[in-house]
Each structure stands twice: as C-alpha cells, then as structure tokens.
Image (cartoon, rainbow, N blue to C red; front, side):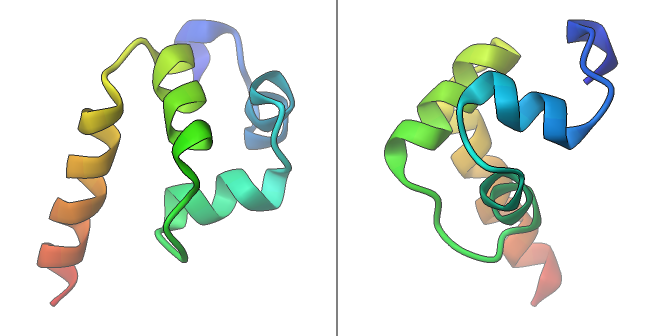
Length: 64
C-alpha cells in the first residue's frame, strides 16, 4: 500500500469505490468478491486479476 501512497485499507477502499468491509472481506478471504471488485483492485495494484484469484486459491490450500 505504501508504494501507491495509501496508508490504510480505508484509503484504498475509498480509492477503489468500495466499502472498507468489502475490501477487508476480499483480503481476508471471507467471501468471493464480485468480479468488478477484483478487477478494480487488480488495476489499482498493477497486477492481473488472475494474480489475486490465484493468491486466494493458494491461501485456501495452505489453510487446509
């Protein structure tokens, strides 16, 4: 977050146009985010949406 001059999840959520709760849920894997949220987050971070999805899948495998 620091690379993009974002200091908090709240600031990132605001820049993405989603609520802090939605962002928190995406990052903590509490639910499957809607496609548009993943796309916006990926654009902002400069990564492919697939990178975020694959990361979430890997996190689930490790947790098992």
